[in-house]
Image (cartoon, rainbow, N blue to C red; front, side, top):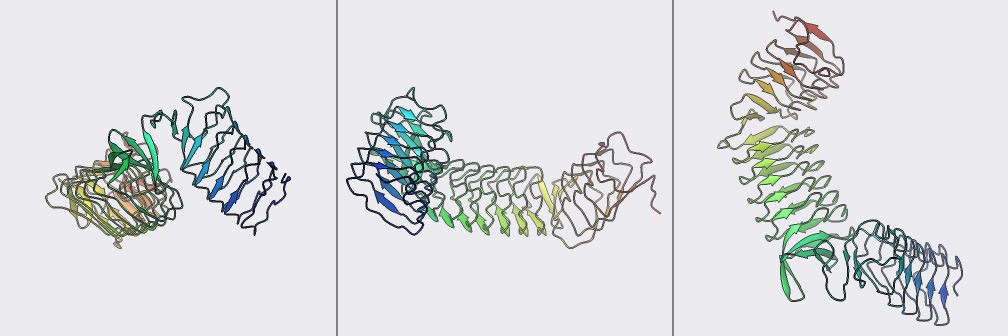
Length: 475
């Protein structure tokens, strides 16, 4: 036997040969051997103790012999480089947390003789597909054996269809979900640096076009620097590239029609993106916190831009809106502190740009002021009857604003965080003001022509208690 803690924390150990005389590997025997890359267990071994290979972070592969009947608790826990493992037919039990945190493990097949699987055995295996020879879950498996709800293919010796109706397969480290003669990119290992998505894949003689980048497909792939999306793809799911912090550029194929919510959120290194002419909708928060993005052109095919779509794109200096956009969500450009120009195609029937600011086509609603401008004074045009939600939010350059007599309503958060604003005059035509309009306007005095707060103003319209002069009349 190899005893308890025998090689514990031998961080310089890169390889080891275990002789055929060994029948058991003790608890924590190789725990913390962070330089160990591979190991062969001889056919004489019948048991692998708890924590035996815990935190062997460089271990990429391991072969378990047919003699092993039990895999101990946390035996391979934290083996973050482990990509594949074969569990032999001799194994009858897999203990608690056996493969916990093996985040790059892509597939594992559980033999039919396994009558016991412990709590959270595959928890945190974010890239994993589990293939089970059994046709359904055996009685002796813990209710939380698959704590992270990894895809499971039952009866895998006879068919490949999982409970959700998909066939899961891994090609070049990328997991695909196949259904209805089309393929979805389901998940990539987080360590991947470059990914070339094919237009189609072949599985058992059947060709499946790759049409969908699924929800969370590239989520938190922090090493990914570039990707090409083929023209076969028609949709990009929610959070598909969220937190890909090393991704600098991406080209979206001409067949993509929709970009899901949070699809590129927190892609902090993304400097440019080309949106194909086929895209019709950009989801909520789609480019949120893309802090290196400097400019973007929204093609003529786009009809809708979601709420907070470009939230806190702090380096974005300009944006061009095509002629078919009919809907722009709330606070779409909030936090774009470098934005100096919003351009709109003259043919657009719903929106208009005046002096780089965004208005409704009839100029009755001021939707978004380009808050990166250096101007310190702004006079709202007489045509405007409504100031949109968050229209001036975060504008730190303006010191004075005049609201024309035609304005009747001011939306929520309209002047939120305008810290340099020292004065604003509200005419008695304003009958409606929503919540938090002047929140955190730390230098502001509000001049109101009304003698007291009109009934249509929300109770929290001035939450920072800025000084108010009621009954103000300009000279």
